Length: 146
Image (spheres, rainbow, N blue to C red):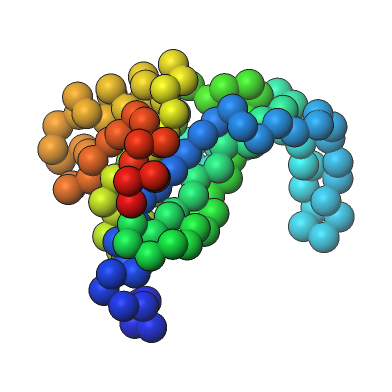
């Protein structure tokens, strides 16, 4: 699908951080699509009636070429749970690979939720974990090393 990219450009690193994007709480009516905006929304995992005050953003970064692209965002109330974060990553990696991207690693900071999700990902069986993907809890090291 991504024929215009060179082979070195399709090798990606997924970076996530769930506590950096803080939102102003508030509920709004989206008249164009007739939905109420401002509540917690974790995509396929589900929604709640809790007002969102954070955004979890997944960003794809080039491993060999310098570029970055937001690939998904989720509205959360506080920090997302480690289990939900694991589900989001396990869903994102195969979707990106189906588009023709190769995910080399996922990277996050050492927050407790991130460490918990990474531990769960590393403890999963091979069939449940995205194949060939490394899970790294030290963004500064990996991003500066690439």
